[in-house]
Image (cartoon, rainbow, N blue to C red; front, side, top):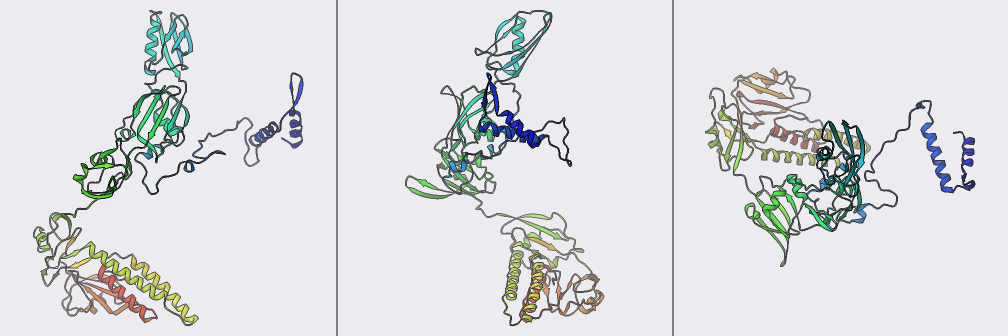
Length: 579
């Protein structure tokens, strides 16, 4: 609207005629008029880039508040402080995390009971044609023309058609068709009080679940409210009680048809215990009584199968106490308010899982007792003597791999400290140090990605040590071969047929020779049994692996020493040459 017509319209609206007398509008009314005109301009004015059709009405999307506070409101966290920090949430707290109070279904369920104020449509055709919509009066009756009053209060919605049809058929006995339908129900106002976040009065349908009203009230106060003792009161008398634990576990929830002024009362929280450790539900659990047995708690917390012991700490009449019980004894133990429980796996495994790799026949996994030795296991592994190199067995062990990883990490940290803390005496030396630090960082980043194999050498000269096995061991039986593998800093890493008259230099030459970065003096030979030889002499055996290490090109002698040491450690631990 142009400014001048808008001013004139505002001036004209400042006077209103009431019984022929002019009255001036208040300032608030003028402000409301301005706001309405501004809104009209915003919704009807089209920009050239985004024209709005003249016939299209403005569309408004209804949104829920989603926790947004109105002016003057106070957040619940300020009204209801937490009594103790660090406690886990109560079991069932996620029950009120959904938004189902804004996703309600406006229809009626089959078990809804007709109440005063409900509307019912009645259609009669045939010998008599009649149609009307009637309202249930305060006495629970509907009045049908030519029939009279029919009492329908407390009739289920699924039965209303049959029930009213039977009453009408008593008058119209023949040649009449009847259809009855419950159109809509009258909303009810329910009070939700006790230990909820927002006590008050809330509207809903008589057939709504108690959970609907509890959610509208913000849910149960997790620090003070009971999930196990909730009552529905009508005229001061309890008409229903329910335990949300039963609903969460078994889906049982009493059906209640609410009436105006009914009260949902969430009672005070009762005795609770805190559960942690090897359980599927590490929550705070509530008892229905002052005490509960460990077996009852386990029904809700659901300990893992590996849980063998339970630690309990709390307070009794004679002061604080703690006890550590086997799980069987815990099931009979009496728990009280404030106890803290820790479920623990405190039994050493009596059976180990051992894997077989390489050349073997039969199963690849064995379950052995914890005191089993290698010879006992090998006696049960079937091999083909023509294919399996059973004299060069070795083991890959997790604990050894972890130790190798730890030692490499310590060496890398020492290397980084030596580079970053080295003193400099000039700008030129500082630039050299900076470039050196960059190269060292690149080297340490690649080195940290190497995963050691955890090899345990158990065989030498055809003799196999009879060592104890550990959980997760991998027993590797090499395959007999006629090849020698050449890798590392050579031009063409490859496998070459073993030659009893060939030297290491011959094998390197057959692999294309050394690369520019090769360290001619650092050549490792890894034998089939996992043993590493840095000073191999004489002819190589089939199955050996030649690994040419890289040359470190750094200016500072201490750094060269550290990097060389790390390269050796990685080559031994992972059979890899890193540069």
